[in-house]
Amino acid sequence: MKRVRVLPALAVLALMLVGAIWQPHDPDAIDLALRFAPPSFGHSLGTDQLGRDVLARLMVGGWRTAVVLGCVAAIGMVGGSVFGIAAAMLGGWRAALILRTAEMFIVVPTLVMALTATALFGLNPVTAGAALGLAGIGPYTLFAHALARRLLGEPFVQAARALGVGGPGLVLRHLVPNMTPVLFAHIGANAGLATTAYAALAFLGLGADPSRPDWGAMLFEYRAFIFDHPLLMVWPGLAIAVVAATLNAAFDAD
Amino acid sequence: MLPARITLRTVASLLAISLVAFAVISAMPSDPVAIAIRAWNLPPDGATVAGLRAQWGLDRPFLERYGAWLSRFVRGDWGISFRTGEPVLQEFQQRLPLTLTIALSGLALAPLFAIPLGFFAALHPRGLVDRATRTLAVFVQAVPSIWLGLILLYVLGVQMRWIRPFTRDWTGLVLPIGLIALHSLAVLTRVYRRDLLEIAREPFFRTALAKGLGRGAALWRHGHAHALYAMVSTFRAEASWAVGSTAALEVLFGLPGIGQFLVESIAARDYPVLQAYVMVVALWLLVLNAGVALCLAWLGPRRA
Image (tube, rainbow over all chains, first blue to last red; front, side, top):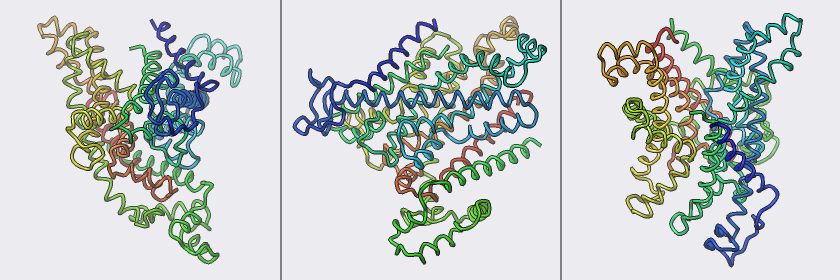
């Protein structure tokens, strides 16, 4: 059941990566003679208010969203495992300190953290991904800690300990390989959330270059044409919804 | 005992968050004095720069600056906005009620609908209510509220002409509140239903049925407190989600709340506003969390 649903997610991710290497047109090429062209053979999804090809911009936006997702997963994964395992191995007051800190940062909303970070460092897929990933470290730490605690109680880990394996060896040989798949699935379940969060960030813009084709920024740009060309704002929204829905479905057991 | 511990933890969290926010904002690459001189059209000479640096205490060590800022903040001096030139506290007092109205009304509406919907979904698994709320939950978690807002503006404003998009009247409030409530109610309904069904698998639930209680009565009598407990815990995550979404919806609908103020201020690198926003949001969520913690302790003292 679960395996079947992973395929659409992989297909969607592959489509997003295609945007990095190929687009049907130059996404920034302005053609004022062809403003608001309806979908046609040359421009499958039509053109926008500057005559730019909407499909090409959507594809670049997909690649940028994929970069964000990659950064979020990498940072959440590494940060969460490091702090979670550290808390589980150290125990005592040091574990309490790490876990309390992680809990404290759950309180600050992801979007506010990301807004602050992008306000300071500018908005691009890498900073946004880093900010969203850092915001996720709190919950991932708690999750990784619970996971590591359970593994430390397993007979094979106890046996390794009795044989004298300790510290880094125990972590790298026994904890990390067993935690990675579960942690990855947990972070994957949050990938849909990261997609919509990045869209909201790009929508809010924050000193970002508005000509950058992010899905959220396109929604912001095209919302002005809601009266005359409502189709323009449909495409980026649809792209966000499809990506978020497939990613959610791929990892959601319910 | 418990209220004291929760208060202590809330204050400690607030201090820690303020310290981190202060550290990050003061580590900014751009110089606030340079921004202020540009924003207020001051003469960019040495005397002005030195005067501002001394006035804001930028020449003193970090912890001393933090202490000075904290004592000013507690006394209600939140600094002056670089962009508007007005005291930040005054700006927030004007804008906060609108933001709180949107976010809190949306959040308060959600449980009112989530409990009956979740109950009927659990009463008839795979029934109409169950399938409808499941679809709704999948829908709201994939479709960003800003896009849904745009679609509603198009359908209600352009097609049906019931509302006038981008104007400031009551419709400007109804849509954002509805959007916040819709997301929260879908998520909370699923949590409430899931935990009700969890109880329905317990042996004591079957005993209750055997004693002659109907399924609905047994669910309510034995499952409601448990499911409510789970729902209230989830409420924390929803409250945090609502803060971010309120900011985005304020920008979409052109409502002058603190979220929109923040977005306008960030483009101008208005650090006093940024710091104040982080503090206001942290305080708001910490108070809400403390309330949730008290609720949970009251609902299930043994599980807290």
